[in-house]
Length: 451
Image 1 (cartoon, one colour):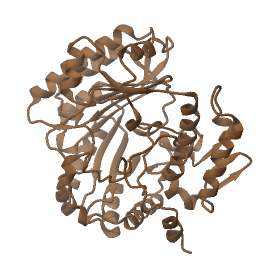
Image 2: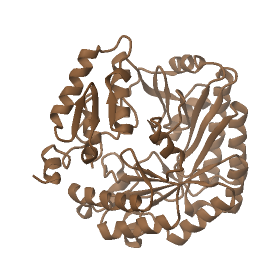
Image 3: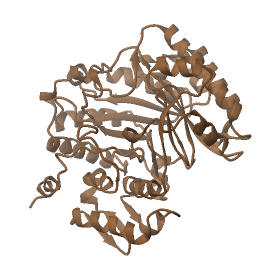
Image 4: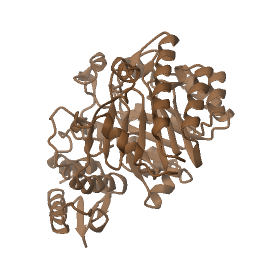
């Protein structure tokens, strides 16, 4: 039986499973977490601790049809400025209760399109964050940059604010595919943006590219990857396009009858993966690639790779605080998510409240399962001794979970000396293997294709 046939027998091409950027996943969040708990969680951060901060700017000038992020279109800078005022108020409220000496190990501005902000707005936001918590030594400040929405003054403002890593969305360079997904962005526009990034002294560059788009073929994705390689990013995220029009209505604009089959999606991924490998990039987790000198590749080699809502990271901080509409925070005690719509978010903040809408409090069992899943997603292996937690399931129970996974995915997963490992040929199954450790029910349409 061929490897593809074996993967098919195990259900790879039919399954829809989480990407496991968290455990439990966001659909399991509920209103059981509210403002008083989050205030207590913030107050419990150790004085002088290093934490991560994510700032969500949900606006785009043009909404791309492929995108399933929480975003909204606007042509008016005044709309973004009004939102910034609300962000500043949330930051002031956070500053008032943060323990003394807290510093930032990571700062990420995402969206949406953070680069819709003008230079003055960029400086104002960065200044407010610096007053709340300064950077820790060796901190990383990354910003998602839309090549269609960047110019020299905004780039200079970002560099002056301390940006030392930039992330550029590519998706696909084929003009016909760009038209189909509603994202027009030429190679020349992308190259100009990258030139500005590097001219500003920012030498760490991430790029995102998608597989599984309408009309993609191995030849077409190979051409896009080769064009991207010519721009020499340090790190690449090769994400599978998630077609979920029941969750992101704009995706109804994308012709579903022209999407590749799951088997074709696997071939697209493998085509791109092989090109990155041939160019000297190291494969990181299920969908990232990095040059050997990149901090993510170093973390993977040293067993320090982590996974959070931005994907793979080497950030060791135990606390991630999300600012802005729909942002998610992670504390040792659990998750907290801000109100999703900008109107609800603004109403909470203007009423003098932290804008918490929902979340999840960790149980001892959650902690064990979360560590199992994160280790499999990052390292494709996990040792029993590394996941046991006081008050959680005992070794015999966890060993039973591991034995069940090894039996279900026999030939692709091994279990020896209490160490569960996904073999290289089984890596396409990683999310499915992780799902076998998820104790929560999952809606059949709630997640993207497993491949």
